[in-house]
Amino acid sequence: MRPRSLRIFQKRKGIYISPEKLVAIFWTGLVFLMAYLRQSHGYDFNGWDTTLLILWLIYVIGLMISTFFRYEREIGTYCGKLTFWEDRIQVDEANYNLSQISKLDFTQAYDIRGMFVNSMLEFSPHLSNGLNNLMTLELKNGQKIKCNFLQTESERLSHFKEVLTHYHKNGILGWLQLIDILGIEDYNKIQDLKKEITIANTT
Image 1 (cartoon, one colour):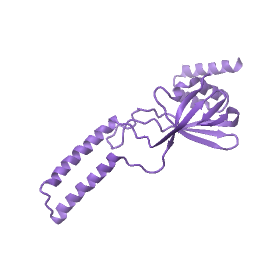
Image 2 (cartoon, helix red, strand yellow):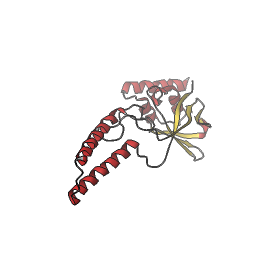
Image 3 (spheres, one colour):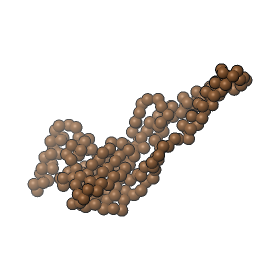
Image 4 (cartoon, one colour):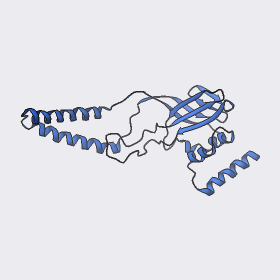
């Protein structure tokens, strides 16, 4: 059984506003300020307010359209790999033997880079960065280890059937989560996997 790996990502805490959103916010504020000064104080901008409004509309519409082709920003840093071995799980440089683990839980495990995340018109990019995945290791000593990880079309949990099935056999990964991660929905295929595990356990 060969080890399978995914890249670990440490998210940066705090609020992040992209440069294009800052431009939109500033531009919007300027448009409203000029409209207010014209209506309340009678300022004459010699048509510059109208020109600015037209340019603002073009920018906002262009920005919203561009979001359908842009990826979410990666706010944080990559820091090592999450590697699934036959006898242990490695989180960057730390190794945890299966005998130390009471539960392996993938709280979020379905975010794939390039996946379309929203069809509504908004300023946020619509293509996922694939980083909204979270694994939690619960150790028998009560410690919990959490980490976010990247999934792509070629490197994702659903391709790790052999090692994940092995973890289920060792009692650290639940049955429902296993078939959910593997994307098995057909009843007959679920029964086939059950038989496969049963046969493996008796040999």
